[in-house]
Structures are given as C-alpha cells and as structure tokens.
Length: 349
Image 1 (cartoon, rainbow, N blue to C red):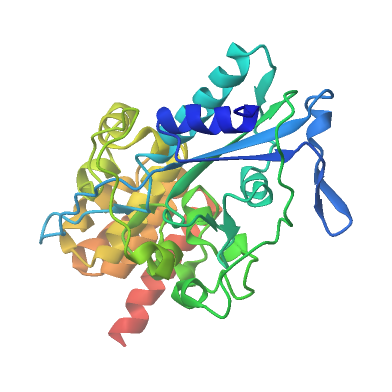
Image 2 (cartoon, helix red, strand yellow):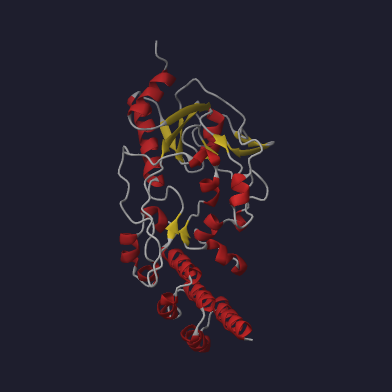
C-alpha cells in the first residue's frame, strides 16, 4: 500500500518538483532559542512539507565591449521566483485535493525545514545544497495538518568537511566564520539596497543583483549542467544587460529589461547598483551618463554617480563633480562628491 508520503513524492516528481521532504511541525530551535514555531502560524499543524526545484538555467553572457559595458546577476536570478512558486503550488494542490489544509508563510525558514527533512545540507556559505543539484535549488516550505512520515534531522547538518572553497572565494570576508554569514559584508545584501562601504565598492565589480562567488566556487556545483526544460515559464531576458541605457532609463525601461526578481530590490537601488558597476567598468563611455545622474532626484543615485565619476576620472568627470558640488544639498551625496574630487587631487599629486 502506498503511503501518503510516497504518494506526495510521486505526485510532486510528476509535476517537475525535484525534491520533496517532510518534517514535523515542531519549533525550529537555534540552541535553546526558538527561531520559529510553526504552530503559531497554524495551530493544528502536524507536518511541514519542503520542496525544491532545480533552477539552474542557461545563461547567455556577452562580454563588455568598449563603449558598451555590461552588468551581471548572480546564479538563478531569472528562475528562482517561478521555481519557488511552482513547488509551492504543486504541494498545495496535492494537499488541498485530499482535503488537508495547506499554508505557505514567509516566516517559515525553508532552508532549515529542508535540512531537517533530509533533502538538503547546509554549506559553509549558509546556503543549502542537495545531492545531484548542488546549491542551484529553490526551496519552499508548506505547513499542513496532514500527518506524514516525518524526518527530524539536526538543522546544522552539513557534509562540507574540511572544504573551504566558498569561504575562500568570498572577496569581502563575509564568510570569515564558516556557516555564519556576516550580512554587513555581503555583496548580495548590499545589492538589495544596504549601503555599500566605499572601500568595498570595487569588489562588487559589475554585479547589479546578487553575486554568486561562493556558489560558483562550490565543488558540488562545478559539474552541474543547466536544466534543459522547466515545468513553468522563466523570463527570457538578458543575463548581462547594458549598463548605460539602464542608468537613466525610466521605470518602464527597467521593467522591460530586467527580470522581475531584480526589480524587487526597487528601481532606486538598481540604478545605484548600475552606477557603481559603471564606475568599476573602467569605461570612459560611462562618464557622460554618470554626469547626468548627478542631477537625478535620488540622493542615493547622485552619491553613487559621484563615486563612480571619481573612479573613472578624467577632465569631464572632474568638471561634472565640481559643478555638482555647488548645488548639492544632501550631506551624503555631497560627501561622495568631495571624496571623489579629493581622490582626483591625490592621484594628480
């Protein structure tokens, strides 16, 4: 007789969900502290169903050329959100068709649930990975009152051993302590909108959303190939958009050019990221558009443009900065302009 758990796994696999696991609805503990108690979300909860879709898609990466610098995203940017939505939808369909309650909630720790259910392990970069799929998976977790055959492994489960590939690959030291990410040093966190320390901005390179240094370095990901077909649609947009048209393009241009996941960071943040990527490009073609950005409504963008003009240098950049200094009223943006002008003075001395 097929159990409810086996039936769920077979159904999910037939719908393109690559991994399914079940764990209890017990509270998630970090030491003695309760991280999340699922029964505060659904009092009658019996189980948590975790699902994962392999979300590694083909990336079309065109190199930058003089006059046309390009940006980059981290892995899974186009496929991550639809993968999560698909896995959630399939699991909920299975449960609700059989009369069970099924609830997805943003406070549920999907990574912890996946590790506790046995379908994944933690990497030292605090991202989870699964056998055969590496860390190129997108997770979901659904609470239900259905009683499954549950697995309750320690949430710290890892199989990384002495490997330090991800730790050593992080250019900012955000993984100085294995298994514990320091968000204040994480490029991905910065590109979601956090302030980027001035001395760290060159390390961002041309990334405008996510980075992927640690994932790309992981031995478990190296031999993986992109998924050939998806059981859902993913956006057919560039993985390396041209930076200059994006910087002062209106919101419609951003939405037409960039994946929806990128836009979740907000147009103001994306333009800030694009400005920094232009500064890191070393391409003087970015100077005119960065000079125009010094007059943008956003102080965040004006400050980033000022920093990038100082990084690119040249007479036109200096003239734009000197002009902007006369009218800039925002303290942070003014500070960036002054720093860039002082950097020019230092480099010329």
